[in-house]
Amino acid sequence: QVQLVESGGGLVQPGGSLRLSCAASGGKFPMYAMGWYRQAPGKQRELVAAIMSGDSTTYADSVKGRFTISRDSAKNTVYLQMNNLKPEDTAVYYCNVKWSVVAGLQTENWGQGTQLTVSS
Image 1 (cartoon, helix red, strand yellow):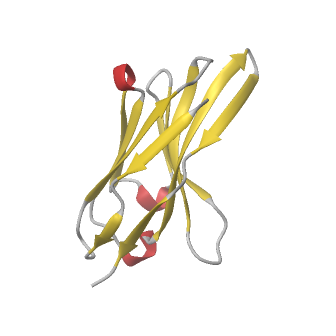
Image 2 (cartoon, rainbow, N blue to C red):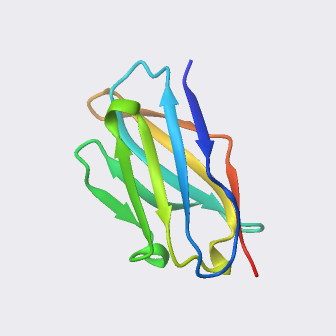
C-alpha cells in the first residue's frame, strides 16, 4: 500500500522561508514524477511544482524564482523549498506521486495535505 508522508507546513511571516517534505513508500511501479499541488479556500487545486524521473522540473508562474523542487531518489522523498513567501501562497499543499504502470499509463497517489499560512 502506497503511503505519502508530508511534513513541514506551518505559519510563516511574509518574506519568510519554509521547506516541505514528502516521503513515498510502498509503490509497486517505477516513479514517473513527484510534485506539489496546493488548494486555497474557494479555489481549485493547482500545480505548484513537479520533478520528473529524469530530473526535469516545472513550476507554476506564480512561484518561479521563489520555490525550488528537488528530490532524493534513494529516499523516495521530494522537497519543496519555499522562499520569499507571500500571503497568496497560503493554502493546503498536497504531495502527488505518479507511477508508470506501463508505457503511456500512469497511476497516482496523494498525500493528506499540509497547511501553509503566510501572515504577519
